[in-house]
Image (cartoon, rainbow, N blue to C red; front, side, top):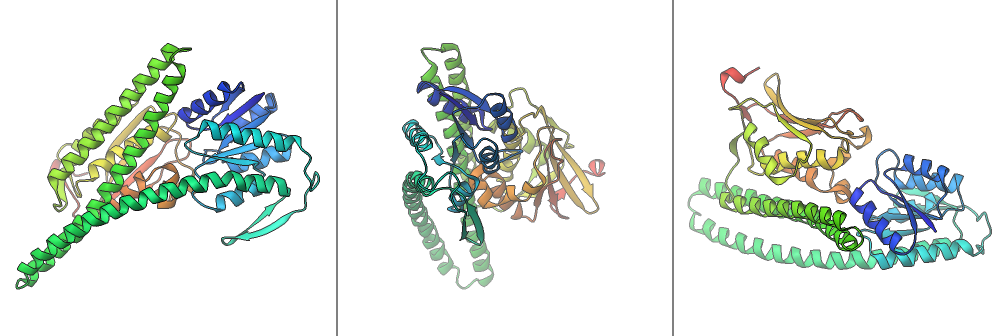
Length: 431
């Protein structure tokens, strides 16, 4: 039996390949939908497992093209399934089933077995079932699947729903704990306000400080949780690969262990960052040298063969929340993670009238035009990471905005637009 795995994350692709090869499959990899079609034309697999969020061609479009040109090949979509509309999109594209991330080997085996068994059985609705026009969430989906495949697809999502319900319960427990801590902080500051009731001006200052402190606490918790979960996911992936290869491929296993060690070091740096922020407390935004912020960003990431160029003049400072240090490291990390072909990352400073622009650009794959605004949204971040959503929140504290203006295929370019009064520079550095 042969299988094609379509996944732009090398770690995820190798993990799924190992799971399938352990079950006797001959596995081929493709990093996006276009290459997947080429692989299918060269050698038709018995089944295709595809990620949904990919460059060039997403999993839905890939599934649609496979069903149009190779209808006998079953397709399983591998996804996070954050939105019920994902199921409707999958059915409309012709998907035979879903597998939720992070992948569970037993679930992979059972879903493949169910899909292949269904493919071998005649559909009770015939070879060409009637089209169903189903309105859902403001859109209408055209579904041409038979009843059996629809039921099988919906059953495959039940496991996802159970898993997400468990995650939701855990998140609610964490939220309750955070609310308790915030409630205690509010009560402490309320007592302070009572002692300062006679001083209206001072009371207003304390209320503003409380609002800022609560906002920073929420940002800090979100950033730390986001970074640690991403880093732990990568760590588990490398360790799983190392464990699986320790007997058959010891050299490759040790390489994965070394990669896991680098991830562990990044986790340590993230935890250290939270400790440093706690020392700062709930202070107001401060002046920070931009060139130093670029240098500090290296302690949170591993550049490997990528060059980080710091073209920001010395002595130029930005007035921003202390968390801007994490914003810089997040921009570098995104260039490494999503740039694919990135060899260099450059920070520079431009002037536009009375405003200033801090620029972070790379020579990687770039960002598609239709994704340039989506990457800053919370909904998009749930699939790719919340770093840019949180970066916009941190920068907005002092009126700084961020946008992406790079050309797809030529690299990403993030511009931090700083209003007048947010940047100060020695006279010799003013361009």
